[in-house]
Length: 396
Image (tube, rainbow, N blue to C red; front, side, top):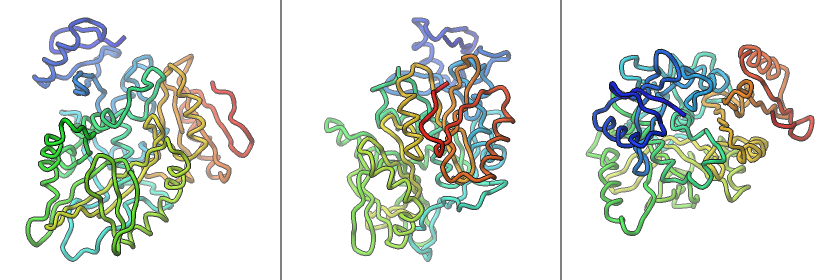
C-alpha cells in the first residue's frame, strides 16, 4: 500500500480520510510525495469519475522503488528511449513534459489538403528530435497508464475512463508554450440526459479550430475511436464514436493512409472486440466542415491495450487473467525492424521480466539489437517467443 506526504501530513492510501485530503490538495495544487524512496518522489493528483487519484509524473516511473505500484520499467526497452532529452524534455521545476512536434498545428491557405500522416518512414532515426503524430499518441497512452493491465480492472475501463486518463496526462504536457490539453479534443461519451451540456462543451472546445478569415489558421488535435469509414464526393469520411459529424479526408491522403496503415486496418477488421484509435490534426472551415490535415492510427484490444499483431494479442490474452500488473511496450517512432519489449512484468518476483516477441522475418541485425537490449538491462529477466520456432513458450 502506497504512503504519501501531502503538505506536512503523512497519509496511507487505505486511510479513511485519504479521498478528502486528496480533494483538498487538488484544490490547493499540492503535489503528493510517494514515500517508496528517499527522498520521496513527486506525483500529481487527477480527478476521474468523481474520485481523486494519485498518478506518477511523466517519465518518473523509474524513480520509484520496483515494489511500488507506481514503478515503471526502463524506457530504453521501448521506442520511448531515443526521444528522451530531445523530443521530450522534463521541466525540473514543474515536472511537466515539454514536447517538440514533428507536425504542424497551423495551416496556410495555399497548402494542399490532408497529408497522409506524420508516421516515420521505415528508415531508422538515430537521433529523433521531434515527436511524430503516432509517437504523440503512444506517449499520451503511455503517460495515461493505459498500457497497464491487471485482471482486477476487468469491466472498469471504457471510453469515459480512457478519455479522462488521456486528458489528465495532456495537462502535464506543454506544446508551443501552452498545455497540450488546451488544443486536444477527445469526444465525450454521449448521454441523452446531458445532450445539451455535451453539445455546449464540444462547441466551446472546438472554437479554437474554426477558421476566422483569410491567412494561416490554427489546428487542433483529436483522439477518437473510429466507428467506420465511408466514401464522399472526391473524399472520404471518418466517422468516430460520440461525435455527430464526420472528419473529412481527401482521396489522395486516404489512399496513402491505407498504404501506411494496412497492417492496423487488417488487424482491426479481423476482430470485433478491437478498437481503432485515430489521432489527427484538424481544422473547421467557415462552412463548419471538419477536415483532417495529418493522421495516424493505432489498434487496441478490448481492454484498450495497444496491440501490433495477432501474436501480441495472444500474449496479452494470456496475461489478462493475472492479478499481476503487466505493461505493454510501445514503438513510438521505431520501425518494425527494431526490437522492443512487447510487455514487461514490473512486479519483481524475483525480478522484473521483459517479454519479447521475435517476428518470423527477423534478420541478423534484429537479433544483435535484441541481444544488446537484453544485456543492457541485467537487473531484468527476459522471456523470448520466436514465432518461427512454434507456439508460445510457458510464461515466466
